[in-house]
Length: 389
Image (cartoon, rainbow, N blue to C red; front, top):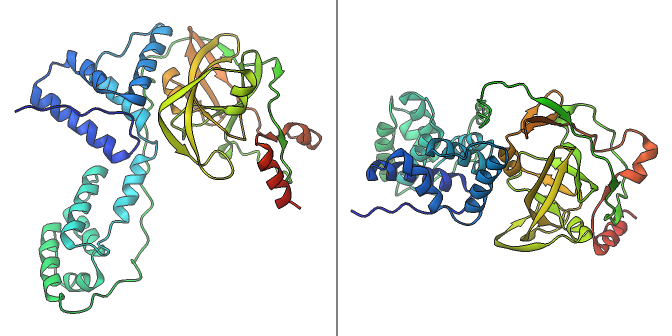
């Protein structure tokens, strides 16, 4: 029997990615492949964005003086950290809570509930799962099943099929109230890969960026400024970096999969771009309709005196900041986030680099006019001006 491992190109669909990991594990079991060869085989089956990310991860480790990843177990940890959103468990649990029969058949609903139960890895008793199952049935079927003592989903499923046959000649009644609201999703802890090494003493270096501010913005915000919120738990991490000796605005965002650079900055500094092989659409980072991301750019990024690296970014016409460092960069350099201080740190060239936050809006009202700026084109500027009249 010939079994072939499917390739993976960086699909961010949660269930498709988890299915692929499951198939990889089953493939190794059936092929009885030695552990020493497993990583090489998976790396060979990566393509597109996934292949580019893996090559960059291995090259970054070499530049940092670390050994490249050699075993599949560690590679799988990095893949999960890279291609699963931080809240994927909550997403799956919410799907489980909202699962109900709707207009589908009893069998389809049963299969969907079992699939989500397996995905969420829930530790529910048979009675609890049966209660959940009955609560998601159509009301015309649910009221007939609920009058019996049911202790498993199999029993509830058989009763639901009988109730459906008995009710097949009567008009279905659609329940308008789904009952009690869903429970709050379970708390979970996401293990930070790469942070299990023994504690070492490193010389600390606080990032201080000096130089001329890049001057590629064309619009000032024409709206009243909000009262600054001093609570750090609600603040986006905003800082500064240096690109070609020009001081640029910077965001570190764990919710973003990709590293992003402003098209205005790329054009202003005349940086070279290349075509993105797998373009995608993005719609949250700029006011107006969604846009297609079709270009890549390698940007020389500096943070303080020690950290200098050339990083691949997606080029986006965003109007808020110059550079956004997403999960890709954070996992490459193995950042740690100090929640109380709201600062990022990582080790580079045997130095602990500390990236401090900078308030995204100036505290001095006199500085607001000159510092709170955004990027947009001429057409957007005129349209926003008309809206504010």
